[in-house]
Length: 275
Image (cartoon, rainbow, N blue to C red):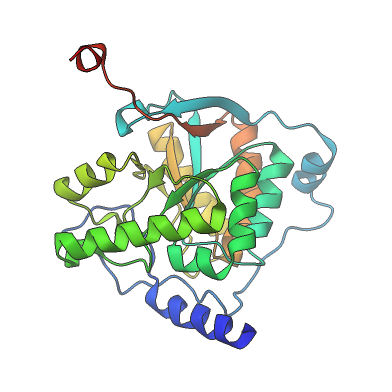
């Protein structure tokens, strides 16, 4: 069984591609996420660095408000507010490191899980949910839905939603389009399933083979220009797990707050209820 799971993960790693924030008519699928199974280069901080010492010895004040949303229209952030979102997991050895860092800083994230990955690692998927993070789906096999018929795209969406629900044991209330390749018809169909589409404001581009320090700099540079927003990362990468403590420390020092997402099912209007 372990060999089967390993091979399944290896096959999926070839199929998954980086989720890019730039909306393009034809998403660039030539840039792949790094292998889900194979190790990546890893750069760690110096053990005695001031940044590390400050994280370990001081209480953190990075956690912001809880934002309850029923639709994408409720996803409104104030200046210096961010949402930390993570796509493509879960994967042992990486997602759990991300969870440990979030816990250390007292903040929550939004995890957009690939259905097949959640099936392969249900215990880890359930842990993500049980630790209070927002749970979303990211299709079953990370398909480019814009290249599929509407019926095939919806099949991929519903299959992914069902797989993540089974693995986590909680309802899936958020969704992100792979490559952000969407359509008005698909977005409306997702909303009809009581799921909020997660768009992207700041793309860390952590799927590019580069150093954790470069990912942190790119993310902060983009955030400085926008002032707020949903940050896209991927919990399948070593470089992301490695850079996350530094990124959160930078956010904290610069006065940003991490918003916790919470879903509330929309209710019928008073007019509708009276009919």
